[in-house]
Image (cartoon, rainbow, N blue to C red; front, side):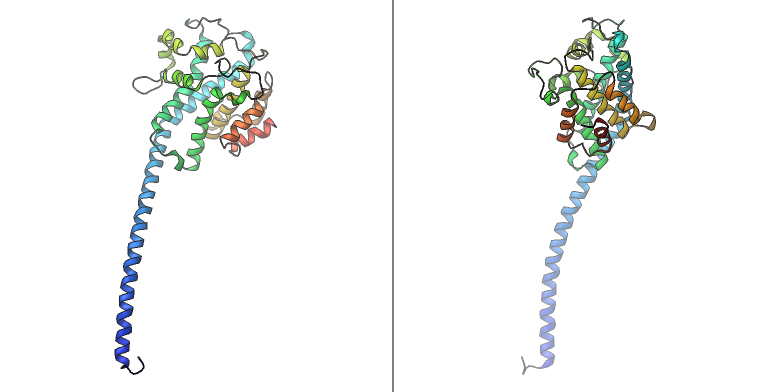
Length: 292
């Protein structure tokens, strides 16, 4: 190389540099295009899934919130007026004259019907990539039915898990919720419910048994379960509802002790931990008020 013409050396170096540059450009371009394509597909997939999820939630959210608000008012009323025994119908589940009982049954199962409708519409979506607030909403609608069917709430109590007395078998709860969803994939109104009361009450027989004559002083655990559900319902409304649907802390404290404190609060905390909800804003506040 020392004896070569400098011009020839320069030409060789330029040629080698061009070849190396060409090879590196090709390799980099191939690498970039491949990874950019994968990135583009992943971004488009996430956008599409999140958009579809938002559309489903937007379509059903207000109806679910309004249904939860209606049940919240009834549970407030019930905690004060249970002694009047309007809900004690002694097995007479098909009489239109039992408005308080019938509307109570309807308001409870209506919440689960809307939840089932939402879950059915989400069944083919990848909800694991949902945005934070949407994922929080999904966790809530997953939790609310659990409070009615999960026997974890009765841990430490003498309770026969194989008998559906103070809880519901999961599939039975889903079947009852499905009974309110019409062929048009809508949740039936209370008017429609009353018009076919005998048909609906047959489908909702386990819920009727659960609610019939429920009393806070009884040794059974159904009142405790219903009270815990009320607390979760309030947390849901406080998280996603309108300002007029929010329950302040002083009223939550009233629920916690009215007419007595639920025996299931410690187990309820464990259920929240299992569902990764203890750090959620409203449940974090609730746990402080519960002091468990």
